[in-house]
Amino acid sequence: MIEIAPDVREARAVVALETTLVAHGFPPGEGVAVGLEAERAVRAAGATPATIGVLDGKIRVGLGEDELARFDASARKVGSRDLAAAAVQSGVGATTVGGTLAVCRKAGIEVMSTGGIGGVHRGWNENPDVSSDLLELARTRSLVVSAGAKSLLDVPATLELLESLAVPVLGFRTDELPLFYSARGGPRVSTRVESAEEAAAIARAHWELGGAGLLLARPPDESVDDVEPLIEEALREAKERAVEGQDVTPFVLSFLHEASGGRTLAANRALVTANARLAAEVARALAG
Image 1 (tube, helix red, strand yellow):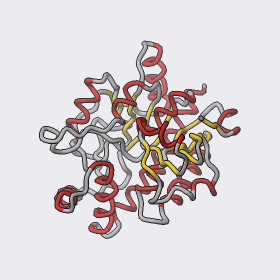
Image 2 (cartoon, helix red, strand yellow):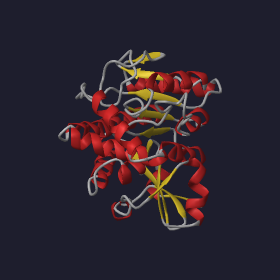
Image 3 (cartoon, rainbow, N blue to C red):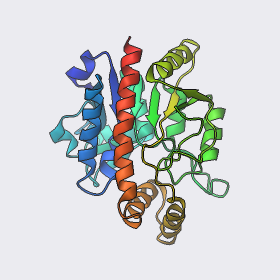
Image 4 (cartoon, one colour):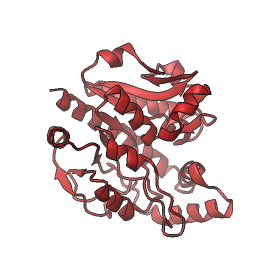
């Protein structure tokens, strides 16, 4: 059921990449370009990219450019609970962070890169909506590089749950958890690291002690610090339009991209590439 590309199977330093970001994280036609850009960043830093998705009855680890082009807005969004059904029912399934981590666990991939992880949604005390990304991170022996949690989430609550799940949250040259588009203003991380090598050493020690996932949070290079009012407006509109569940994130991202005049889109694209580059450096350090 899981098919690993030969270059991924033979590589020592591998970085897993998700496909939901490609299919649903950017305007139509742009996601594939961002995915390819992330792959190039991984290669340029000396590692092998393993973009993961479900295609034609197989969970694929390592996709070619023509295959990646099939992951458009019509792709099924596939978390870890959906992997088996998506594979059996064929079609195109774009893996979330959680779905990608579940595949990493089976394929033995120790590093993953993404834009932002899922987590605890705002208003969780009334509507307990928590992404399975956190559970998969807590039980997968992998380090995930991201710009913190997705901007539409309750970030402090997400960090508290990561602490409850015993997931170390490392800040890459920062003491704060980035707020995806914004470098500053988030809650304090448990540990600050100054290099990819230091993050890799902590991950290795964590795994030797029986731990599982770690989050390495890299702040965006270009902050969009006035985005919070737009997020609140986007969430209000989503509620008015009865947008729910997995459809909320792509709706909010699209709203932000338009309302910010493209600034959030540019920031999102840049941080995805920068995270991929850092993930490759960590993967190389782990490979020795």
